Length: 127
Image 1 (cartoon, rainbow, N blue to C red):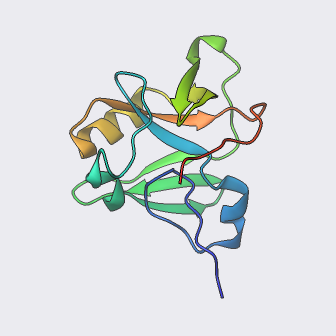
Image 2 (cartoon, helix red, strand yellow):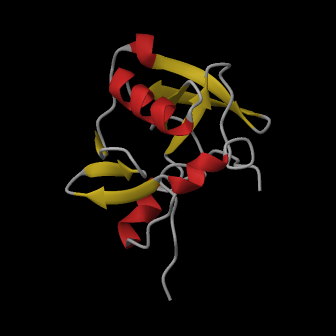
Image 3 (cartoon, helix red, strand yellow):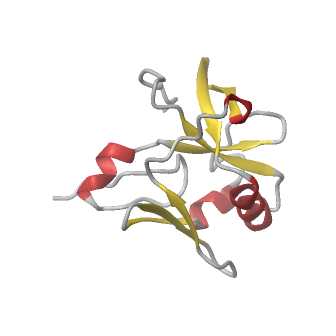
């Protein structure tokens, strides 16, 4: 029996066992700095996710795929910020303008793809 993991919170899942290492490592954040869920943005369910050759690969209907390096963290503190997930402040790193344009174009909502900083302890994701 396989487990399904969700590298990008509230987006498509992967059955890949490597997914356990990347489960909910990324999240989408709207322009108000709030974490986006499927309840707030049903389009998130249409974002397919794969782990391929060291990349997080995102696909969605009508969009070219986008590949994000899995384990690269920008050491420039200007791309680091904090967002609220439930009642917890989470340290995140912005994945950049290309990823932001991709997710914003697909969802129709100005938003950004953020990666939980590796120094951040466990995130208490709301159920």
